[in-house]
Length: 400
Image (tube, rainbow, N blue to C red; front, side, top):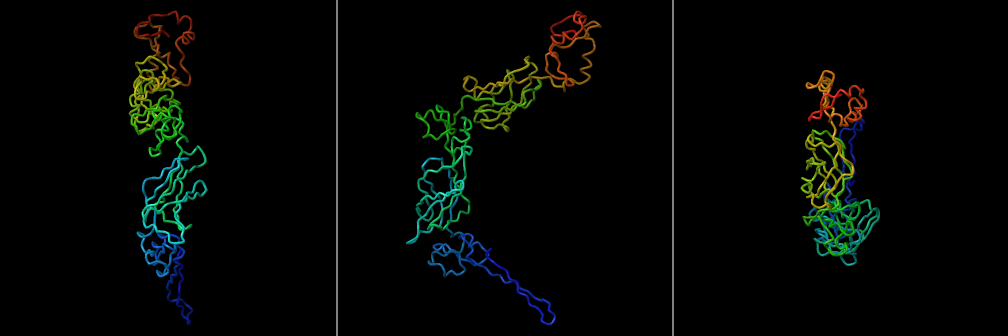
């Protein structure tokens, strides 16, 4: 730190006991390496901005106008718009500042220093005035395609080693449009300030100038009507659910709309609607929907279908490779209901029992044993039971 505390005691010569004490504080302004650190301390230190030193004696400063006593007068970089730099593109960077000193005769000009993955890159800078500085046109890069954007530390120096304060820790963001954005949806949901768009013909995420003309082949999210073709369903969870509805189905994939309204009315299982939940929607990647009642839908399996905005064009429709299976939940067969099925049907003879055909078509398991289809059920019955056929009316009841 910038101080040392020494305690002074008064001690009785006769008794040898300490009876009074006082703290002496010694401070050293020169330990401060920046203007803000110097003037915001607890002691009366002064910053000499042309010498870039902190001192307790204001007369040590070479120029009277170079003396700084309050933080407002310190040279410093100010927050402005975020700095986004695409890799490989030559681009100047303008920074807002205040109180930037004008280098004197014999002093070196300004530089911007970028600290990228452990390496230091010095770029010449131009001081426009005391409130603005520009890092000159330079192309930047970083290693790895598994990093879509990389925040890097940025410093402004002058006279070789005089660092301008950066109290807001302003960073530059380097980015690659194509990194981790292999699909149209992932590309268009990137930060709009990245200015990334989908190059349709080349099927890659890129800047406008990197896409082969005509410009109509480059699509950007800010156009408002952008829609990614060829949506794809990769995974369903769960893959089964009761006909009574209520199942929360999670659909993950690619190009599943850019906004919730794109898929709001476009999800169904077979002919049964599945209602998307806006709070669980992840742009382009995930849809969570609640399955409607399907008791009137007489199929056991159906594929999941997602349409982006409309189902007219096949290029904007995704159909799952796996089917969703409707099952009869155990909760819909309480013990009393199961026992009632063992008693004679009211319209049958005393030695005949009737079960709904749908019971034998279900895949639901009771006590771990799957219920077979009705033809398997026939094979397991004794011959005399199969011959005692009383009736089979329109309600599709079959004798046990």
